[in-house]
Image 1 (cartoon, rainbow, N blue to C red):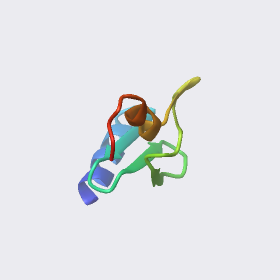
Image 2 (image 1 turned 120 degrees about the horizontal axis):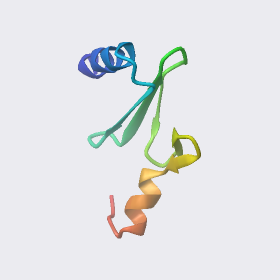
Image 3 (image 1 turned 180 degrees about the horizontal axis):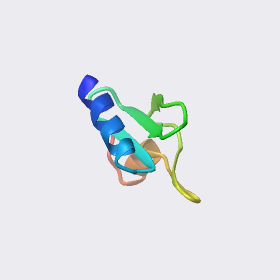
Length: 68
């Protein structure tokens, strides 16, 4: 997790507006934005990607016939 935190901070420092990590081992999502509180949630939550684009990875996988 330290690697993700350091890499995320490096990306934000370089000017990236938002960093989203999807981790397969624990089915979590980490969302980080410069100047905002970072958070970790579950795959089944809907995440704002950019503008009006949202993603719920759990729903997408189920729609594609991929089971947990």
